[in-house]
Image (tube, rainbow, N blue to C red; front, side, top):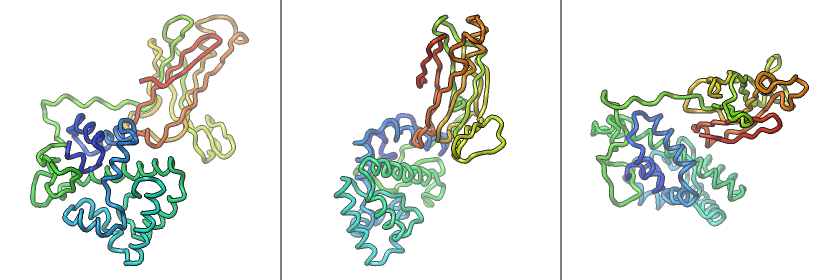
Length: 333
């Protein structure tokens, strides 16, 4: 667990990462880190991670605590090297004001940022509402965690040892605890005897259940669209509203179990934004429930939902429960 505390100071984060480790690649580690950080670590865990960072601009703290700790010094190198004494003092003062207002230290992924860049960001974010700034800080912590995971995976992270190339942690990295286990493996190369990694699936899936008949809704045309803020003139399947449009992503037909085929390529990452599932329920109702088209109450059902930036690595299963005069939907698993 101590290995993951080096990347993020939340004990819950480290425990969850240790539970699902080892990882066969950096991508899998980053995917797990995002899922855990946004969906399993609560606000107290976020604050715990924030508190593990030195105050940016607090030079004495940086020098005394991180003089020999390579990850943090490299993250803040650009800022320290570019900051004159006046700028450093201004950073210290603004950081104090920020912490007094929000209750936690100012947090920013400082890689390749100058002292002036950080000060400008600090002043800008100081004007935010506390709830917005909490999310901003959590997003910055995610970036820092991913950079540290990448550093730990790098063969150059410890030139004096071959352990880094095997995914083991070099011994000169910063700790957030007084004890450690430097031999703990967090990344592992799959062995021939290892169980195969499960294949990817489309991030958005759906199925239809005919609740009036108590059986799957088969043979229903389903289309998936994504809302684009920029209008695409000439796209036949896009209906333009204001300055945006619904751009087609994919379409399929539900099978005998009521499940649609792939509506988009299999992936472990989903573009954030608004999505729309359109079900051609009219044709289904005529075929299964009888009558004529004038008796169909819902010729189409459209379900619109939004994927937030912290949810891009999640799976979205959006079922439709259908009856002649009612329908409902939910986020399934």
